[in-house]
Length: 247
Image (cartoon, rainbow, N blue to C red; front, side, top):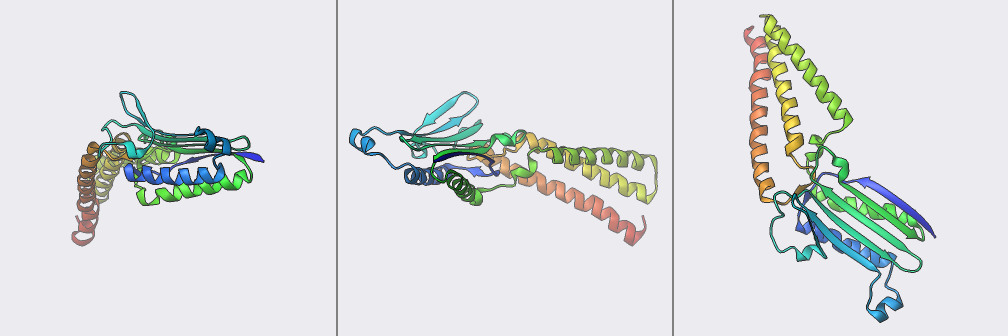
């Protein structure tokens, strides 16, 4: 008999009713295997296990017993987080599971998995359970993790920002073809940094199935295509023009 606890970050992913139901079904199965109902539970009809799902928005929290009870196609536009919590115990074993999907890209660590299990082979059970939960998120993963803030990303963005300012200053002060290339390149890098900062606050880490997110995805695709086209026709275009035409 031992106890093992694990805390693991979740990947950025799209969260909809289908995913929640898949996770619920899996959790019910694994908890029943780890902590089967006792004879007293069966005889009394009382359960020593509790599962619920919480949807948090800007107004408060809604707690329901299952994703099946969600009676709408979309989550509220201002959904901040969705949590799945499962607690079960008997006289020998205890398990606590908490899966939190958070929209925050500024604090992506809010999206995490926590498991504590007291019982036989606790470490093996917890690590296996965590692996399977993360595996079930794979089909729903998004690229939002690239827009969440980490120390490495912040330092790289700060470096690009500083280099862009230096390049723009050099390009404005000189009239050579190299200076023009530095100017267009620096402007492009500056636009990328600004776009990343904007997306950091606008693009959710866990993307909930809402009407606003659906429209936002279309807008993001349009903006991304525009920025990419600008870079291709300015930086790359200037480079080849200088090589081919000499100005």
